[in-house]
Amino acid sequence: MNPRVVRVAGVVLDLCILVGACAFVGARINAHSYYSGDVRSCQSAAYIANFYRARGYSLSGSILGVHVNGTIIESPGFVLDSARASLFFSTGRDVFIVYSSDQKIRDPLPQEVDPLRLSLKVDRDVDRALISLDPIWTKGLAQIIQKVGEISQALDEAGIPYELYVTFKLHGKGLSEAISSNEVPIYWLEELVNAKCSGLFMFVGSTVAPFYLLIENMNWRDLDELNALLGQWMPSDSLEMLAYDIQLKVVFSAPPDESSKATIYKELTSISGVRYVKFTTEFKD
Image 1 (cartoon, helix red, strand yellow):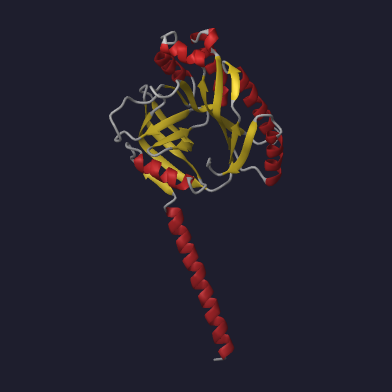
Image 2 (tube, one colour):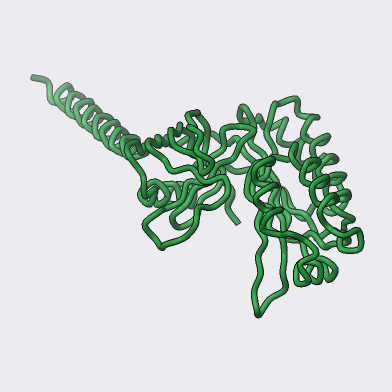
């Protein structure tokens, strides 16, 4: 046989082996990009979510479980946020907390779901954005709602449907005094807000740090409802507050192309008080 033909055949065989090996490795990687099963402790799911989110990926999936109020939750959705042993799982308008129940003895958190089944799949498309804002002095939530409205208008320019989630802290001298003097039924207010709004609303108190209110992963459409509840149950002289650590998470229905991202970036960065805008598959600092 012609030596040249033998060499060419050898090269072709080597390429076939290389392609096959790459396909095998890719299949093995993708096979480990999923989580499905009974996850009553959630710890494995949270570990997997943290692993992939730290590497720039998003996770979508579905949940079946029992809400803290006793209702059955069964819905597709995506992981909005995650911590060491907990997930914020969004079904669009609603945001639920799936928390490890084997870490410590404690009362259930508001919006918590005890998962009977949780399925997660890695989504490698760039379909999200993180927006950070400077601190804002606000009367109730009026100035925050105004600023989030400006951001929503800028996002509308791209013409891509999206959901917008807001996280921030509220602190004020009048607020601390009203809570300390029991003028505000804070724990009852916590329960009321979490029953009516998405995400998590919590009072955080400490003997070594000021009191503050934490609003975490709340759908922006619920801000008006939250503002009304705060205005109803908090003294008027305690509504002057500082909002800080403000982050907005944008989840697009489809990955924006480069032109859309350029438009969004230009519109958002032209808004006063926007600290930075990052397009990413996940929300990393």
